[in-house]
Image 1 (cartoon, rainbow, N blue to C red):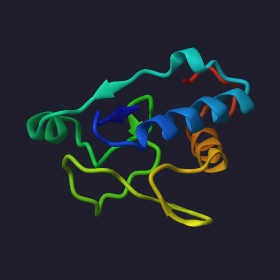
Image 2 (spheres, one colour):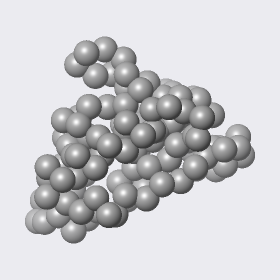
Image 3 (cartoon, one colour):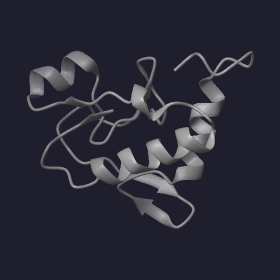
Length: 106
C-alpha cells in the first residue's frame, strides 16, 4: 500500500485490506507499506493519491483519468465517495487479479 502520512484514510484502507485478505484465506503479513512524500516520488511510481492499494505492483482501483500527485484519494463505494474502498470491494479487486489456480500470487 502506498500512502501519505498526512492522509487520514490509509489506516482504514489498511484495515480493509487485512480483513479482505483474511476472508480470502490469504496472509496479511504480505502487506507492505510505502510512504510517498515528494512530487518526484509520486511521479516516479505513478501515485494517484493516498491510499493506493497495490497487488504485485498493480493499482487495484486504477483510474487513468485521475491525476498523479500528492493528495488524498476518493473511492466510489455503495454508500457514496469515501476515503477507502469497502472490505467487499477490496476482496473483489484482489480476487480479480489472483491466479485462478491458487492463492500464491500475492
